[in-house]
Image (cartoon, rainbow, N blue to C red; front, side, top):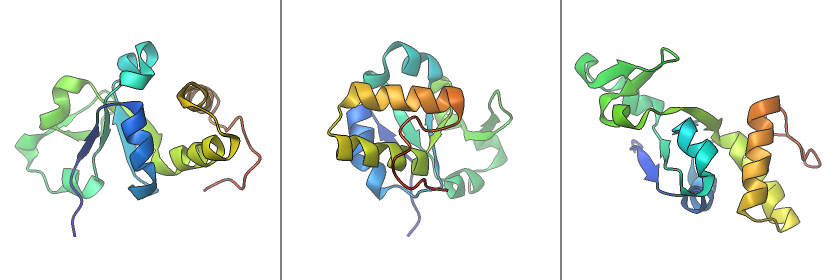
Amino acid sequence: MREAMQIYNSLSELIENIPSLPEKDWIYANLDSWKSSPERTRFFHIPWSDIQDLEDDEIYLDDEDMDMPKSVEQYDLKCWMVVNQLSYILKNKIEKGEGEKWFVDEINYYRENDDFRTANLVRLS
């Protein structure tokens, strides 16, 4: 069965759905929204197969020269995190009993350093 694009209207909604998403897929977000209000940011899971199935007139190139559906162009989305990175951070969040602020801090650390701050679990590749 083919996956369809999913939109998560908050960080808590995304967190609930991380376990059901394909590990190697990207989550897209508006980075300005993430910086100003991470808990209320809208997140998009757009399967690569969906993008590949679009006609040329249904695609635009984003600032990183990535094919994106025109249907999301107004959101100014960028590649934000890969699902397996989020899964690793979520596993630590659950094990440590941490909240959303901790989750945001961990994501920001990863995005700035390309490494996990909490490295007590076996890392996902």
